[in-house]
Amino acid sequence: MESATQALRLNADTPSSVDTSRVRLPGFERHNLPVSVLHIGPGAFFRAHQMDYFDQLNAVDPSWGVMAIALRSRKTPEALARQNGLYTLVTLDEEVEYRLIGSLLDVEYFEDASAFDQFLQTGLRLITLTITEKGYCLGNNGKLDLHHPDIAHDVENPNSPVSAIGWLVKGFRARQDAGMGGLTVLSCDNLPANGAKLKSAVLDYAEAVDPALSSWIEQEVYFPSSMVDSITPATDASLIERVEAHCGYADAWPIQREAFTSWVIERIPGADLPAFDRVGAILTEDVEQHEQAKLRLLNGAHSTLAYAGLACGEESVATATANSELHTLIANMMRDEIKPSLEPPEGLDLDVYIDDLLRRFANPAIIHKLSQIAWDGSKKLPIRLLDTVRDNLAAGRSIEGLATGVAAWMRFIIRMTQANSAITDPMADRLKALAKGVKDTADHDVDLFLSLTEIFEPELVSQPKFSKALKTAYDRVMVMEKSNLSGEEQS
Ligand code: CS2
Image 1 (cartoon, rainbow, N blue to C red):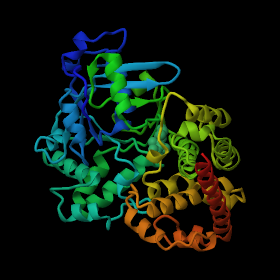
Image 2 (cartoon, rainbow, N blue to C red):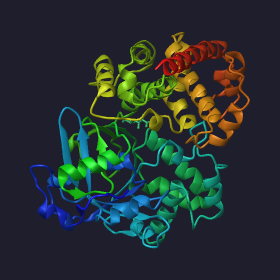
Image 3 (cartoon, protein in one colour):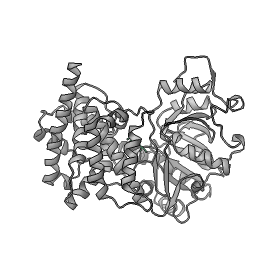
């Protein structure tokens, strides 16, 4: 993303000339930071969330310099290399704050020769990951899918892996060969028990390529889980312009997010974790309840709002939350269906949390596109909605709102297919082929979607209450679509 104006490009010299009444600078000397963290997947969320914690930590304990490796594209490494790893974090709420983030020392593309050497840095203490749900290559049983094309490739070619799992294991092998110690690997993705799932995936893959290495990893590497939270809309041209106008330099890749942020990290014996609790994170033995509350309430409501909101012609989370039908849908779903499925973690009042979520979704300072949240539904639905559906069916509770989210996803896939629009989802081709066979009747179409066993487990599909609720919800979503279309025609 290039700026059209002539402002000076952000670079290593910028901090010395920046107007500090407009932009907050890192509270540490960048050039003194040792490299102690390797991050895989330097997407927007990592730069908006974890890097903020590293920057605050370095202001009190300047020992956490971060190197990042991009597995999917050269775009981020190239844009950030031109800025010496510096970028602006903009927090958007009642007050808007601009900060220059300084702890990211370099970003490299995984195919570049020097990228892999990061694993062998003697000062390396921590590996963090944001590779999204699909990056773990898991089947719907939560275990590594050895038939996943990337994993199958890596098992055949362990020295030139393309998956994050293959990359990590190649790195561990290099450390084992070099007689170096293990590490702590911290997953920061929206998966329940993300550390345990990552560990099991890494061990299963290592077992397939080198069983002795698998034992070494089991003894030497720690995989705490963590819950991450901060609403982070994608960077767009208006953010780039806004940063340039306010800060006086051209930043090719600033990041925006809400002011709220939270990070709950599992404390496990032996793991070497920075003292993130000094800068607002929670370190606890008991991360699972935090993860579950966040994934089911925030992300479950987000996905429901995305698919139902798009059916109603809404574009952003804030406008969808202002739509009274959608507001009622997600508020009731959170209060009556999701909350009873949760055991609240200590110190978290779920009613307050739900009210806060509705406020956060309504934040008028942020344009968080529903189409961004709609990505990768086949990977998100099981975690965000179907786990709760399963619990509620077993307990005899309502699933009306949850089913509306799932049915709205089906309709989203159908509309996108009919409009010949691209679907971002690892199952996109299958989904499109399936959507071509719909008849726009709930009975037929819902059964068709329920044949996708990668998403809908047979045990769930066999429950008549589930398909009945989905069919009712499917009709409800078609009514939403129709009233949106007739509204469009009238205007
Ligand atoms: C969103 C999340 O894009 C999505 O699917 O639901 O990224 C959400 O904004 C974050 O998890 C908030 O912490």
